[in-house]
Image 1 (cartoon, rainbow, N blue to C red):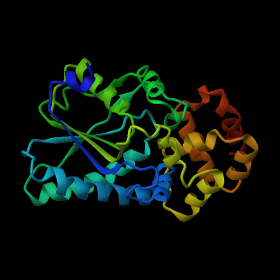
Image 2 (cartoon, rainbow, N blue to C red):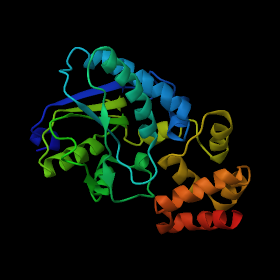
Image 3 (cartoon, one colour):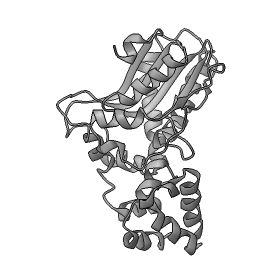
Image 4 (cartoon, rainbow, N blue to C red):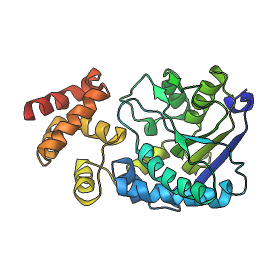
Length: 278
């Protein structure tokens, strides 16, 4: 029995874009890759777009006025890219709620206890589940009591993350009605889950592309881009980091320490280089 089958609350799914073809997305794959690597201006564009689609095609005709709590994808210290998309999604949803006399959304966080060096997007469905099932997710049960939950993420590939969320809810004996909301969803089971990695890195294929985003977009640190920077070959990392401001170097270091990336040997050379540079 799957977690969804055993869940006692009602679940409403919505995805802004359904991907059935590796070459047709309905949105710019270059922009998606930039969004995943820190372009908050694109997070804003995606968040507004998803909110508009969700309100028009799913929400406005079914909402019963109950208080909504929005929960972005789980993170420990550094937010994910989808967290920033959530910020702008909430702006648009709140405007709709206010105009129609409903309570604006509340927000809370899914806390997690484990941080990973592995790139989730490169994994098979089984490997994803084996990795993430070793994590511990927690949400404030009292805060969400008697409210509708809206879980928001950027892409659904295998459904593993959703299974873990539902397991968390079941384990905590939570049965709130839920929205499971995604910017995009892969609906063709013949396409490998590694498609996610292909999409993540569609534009960003090296640190030069990250530098381009920093210089040409509105940049903000997220989990993926910090890991991408720290995981670089030390020589390439040195070339990249020397192009950045002292504040940027400090921020990378603070983010790395906050997410405990010093526990990963692969990151230590670059973390130690940062310490010397500042």
